[in-house]
Amino acid sequence: MSDTPPAPPGQIRPPLWLLVMITTSGTVGIHIFVPALPQAAAEFGVSTGAMQLTISLYVLGLALGQLGYGPISDALGRKPVLLAGLALYAAAGLAAALAPDVRFLIGARLLQALGGCAGLALGRAMVRDTSGPKEAASRLAMLNLAVSIGPGIAPFLGSLLAETLGWRAVFATLAAVGALTTGLALWRLPETGRRAEGRGLAALARDYRQLVTMPAFLGYAIGGGCATTSWYAYLAALPFIMVQQLGRPVHEISLVYVLLVAGTALGNILANRLVARIGIARLLRLGSGGGCLGALLFFGAVLAGQLNLVTAVLGPLIFAIGVGLASPLALTRAVGLNPRVIGSAAGLYGFSQMAVGALCTALAGLGSNPAVAAAVVLAGAALLGQVAFAVALASERR
Image 1 (cartoon, one colour):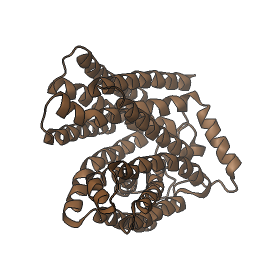
Image 2: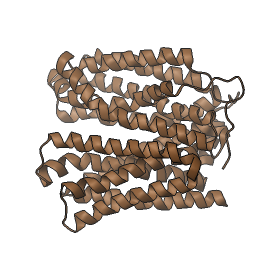
Image 3: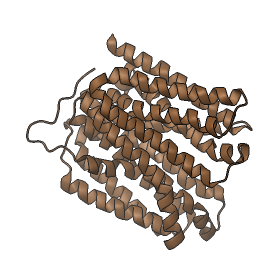
Image 4: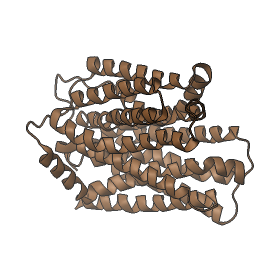
């Protein structure tokens, strides 16, 4: 694997707390508006399906936007491209807060996602720009920890804002946070990329073509998606499993969600603590293997007709810990394969994660039994992730 040297002498390393703000802004925007959907639908007099477009198109924007920010930042530098994305995020949030109708709101949300995904792609790239592989894995683990916790808190914050100040306050808050983050980035962030002057669209297309023809990159990207966002399938099915199939009270759904977020956080902490001692490759195998074990435990319990509160949570919790352990390691490997195109690699990796998450969520909605659908998707993704990581590690050894 190509190693990226640490930041040159005299270069200021980006503060991790600021990279956390930049990276989480995009993903928090998905979840924070969900509790306010009925309120906004009632004001505009539209169906729930129409309001759901403000979520689905936002996720689509997060996925597609990362494909552009990475290579553009390789050509123009990280900081100016990131500032443009953050400014768009803030402006679109303000537009959403002032939306006169649902179509305007949907358009503003799409623009908000296209701005917010700059932080997802470039925050990670800036870590990799200034750190060697093991240190980058440690810093990315802490970044992932914040990214895992942020979406867990977002629905509670969105519910509080909507109930006290109305749904428009959700977007006013996001706009204010976006403006603050833009100002802090302008003030505190150094330029970490190596600008490649004169690189046109043809060169950027070659970068992507090179990445998608590298077995190692494809293995890490596919495996990383299967080891991380595939659990969206379980999260989408969780309310139906808990309430309809197990007869549990609604409030327990949020408790299980918090427990799973805590499992992911534990995995991130373990990755941060153990990577220097065990090494990225071995720890990646351990994390993905643990996640696979958790998925198969859940799958086995469902097939055996032993679904209860313990079996419905234990396997996914083990999977979540594996997710937290494997995710920063797979990302570090993927974006470090070619130091010349770190931005492009981070963007393409982020796109693959969102794409896998969207696909797994859609598959989990098939059939009449939510637990069976979620178990099949989770187990299948975990096994595919194992194969993808094995291919990637074998390719690097060659």
